[in-house]
Amino acid sequence: MIKLLALGRVPACLTFLSFAALAAPASAQLATPAATPVAITASSIPVQAPAAATATLQVTPTPAATVLQPVVPGRAAVLSSTPRPTTGLTPPTGTADVRPAVTHAGLWPMVWAKTQAVAPALTEQEECIAIAVYHESRGEPLDGQLAVAEVIMNRAASGRYPASWCDVVKQPWQFSFVNPRTGHMPSVDRASTSWAYAQAITRIAVGNFADALPADVLWYHADYVAPSWGRRLAKVEKIGAHIFYRAV
Image (cartoon, rainbow, N blue to C red):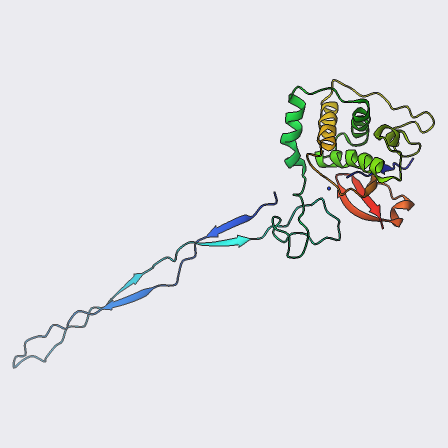
């Protein structure tokens, strides 16, 4: 069965390379001592001692120079047609501000904190998101798990799908882990780390603490399948093993 996934709603840094360049020899001084005369006698020929030459090489290093090494900007939660910041920090002139890119490493401290802190239990609607994250993307990068959660939330807010998160998840033929005839969702291992992460990701998504995708991303599928409907949509992002789309 082709897995259709709902799409939901996606600091860069500067790398400095310092190097010191040695200048070419700054100066060369040639010291030539004065010639030493030899006394002339009747039986001698005037003799002049050869000049002794020495060369002193002085090397003066130039001050260390700092070279700005541009870095590739990270992913930002904006429309793919919007110009990306050239530095990863400052948007180009004339474009709207963007939120910093969300990455697996960037989310990890927040996810860890939300698995350790004492938090209220998830509501029924929130648990539907967490169960979907668990079954659809456990083992995926944290930003990929967040993207799955946001797809569900985006669908519910779009007006094109059911208005509740649970109804979005249980809609027939949308998520492959759900029984399309009964809406039954398989159980999760509630003692597992994957379930703890899924709950943390859900809290981050519901609390709008970070964005992995724009709000108009409503579809995704695994990268090892190529459903025909994908050709009618606009690819937005690939995170982990999932490719995310919006309407053209």
